Amino acid sequence: MSIGAVVAIYFIVWWTTLFAVLPWGVRSQAESRDIVPGTDPGAPVRPALVKKAIATTLVAAVVTAGIVWLMTSGIVSLEDLPMPFDIKEN
Image (cartoon, rainbow, N blue to C red; front, side, top):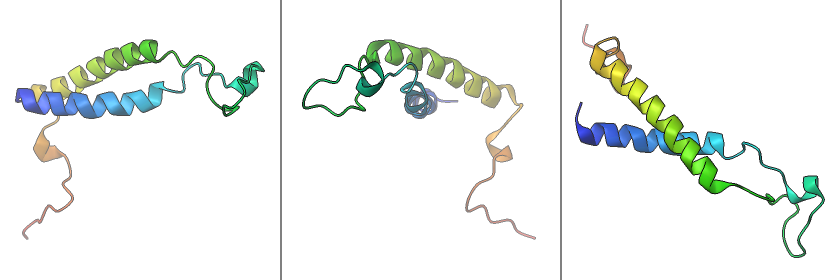
């Protein structure tokens, strides 16, 4: 597996993981009863984006390592995966 393929897999996994991690521990201004005038009451009080970016990076690294291991170990190969426009000859 090439380095470019691993980087591409990591990039996709990182962004997918980010959207899964973003809601962790979020409290809105309305929930905490601390609404700043001129802002939306649903806006987060403390989003903790640095902690979430670190968590995303760690989780994405583990998931990517698992995917790379599966692909290089021979348990799953690219030929095993269904392709959308795969034409089978009879």
